[in-house]
Image 1 (cartoon, rainbow, N blue to C red):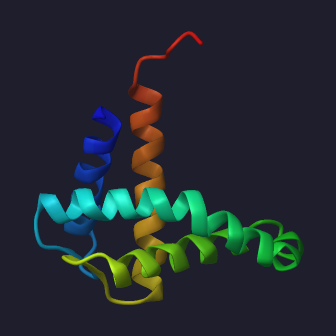
Image 2: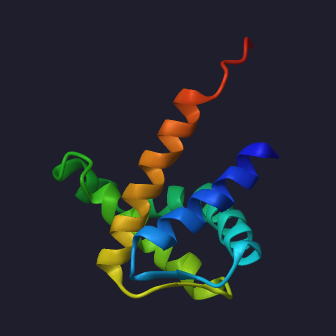
Length: 112
């Protein structure tokens, strides 16, 4: 639950730092984080599977394009969250990934 709330904060932070990404308020950031989680769970693996040859040829760099497309899909279906174009979606996905990595590295490790 804390990770979900932090993702909402990270969506707001990325929107604040990038002028091409807009979030009306924190509630919409939480909704965008929820839709993004669902899209990463369902849509992203399908896109990766469909574009596997291109991904292999580009040594995985095409995954950045897939991430941007997923962000644009989330922008299309989430009210209060919008991205102005592909390049803003790409920057948003990169920045969100960096922030999520930082949060994951700073969080206490669980012994499973």
